[in-house]
Length: 232
Image 1 (spheres, rainbow, N blue to C red):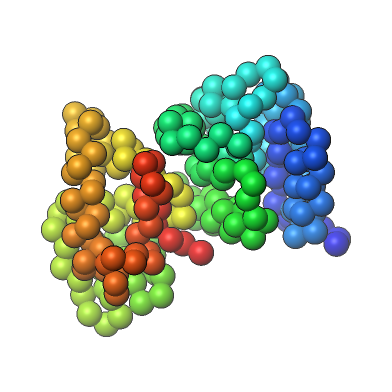
Image 2: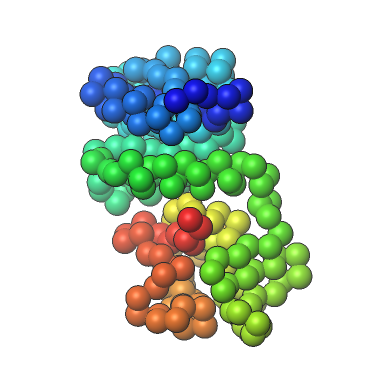
């Protein structure tokens, strides 16, 4: 498929040849430019020299752990970083996200899911750091400028904490936000150990915003890691 000058560039930092071949074929067939690196050192050079729109990063690199590489990239760049790793442990996901990664996919994953995560990352970049002032998903509308929330035509009344929690998820829509990140942004740095705060208020939010709170479709749980506001 022919790619125009505006095709987004995806830098894949991955040492498995089979995975690189799979990603190259899949991404190029969906109009992405593909750049690859096999080591963290090469990945850093490509990230600074090629200015990619998104980085797909494996954690298990031969010369440097992907979590440390994420920290180094974050020292100078806000490029979206999506972790692709065979490590499925919650601790690894939390460590990568807290280091500055935007998202995490556990191998093996479907191409459809990866493409959705890429689109969400590119939308956040296009919207700028603060995102769009109005977020809509189905009949849910969150106006960040006016601090108003609607389901259909009806305004939803939230407490200040409920609103702050929702607004934080809206600003990171489509991205996993860890319990620690939510606690820090909503309750402050002294509350990072009180994970029950998030659970209690998320339950309240779901009762106000989800048609069926027991089967959430908008405020999604990433078990053991945090929450994601659906965006795609």
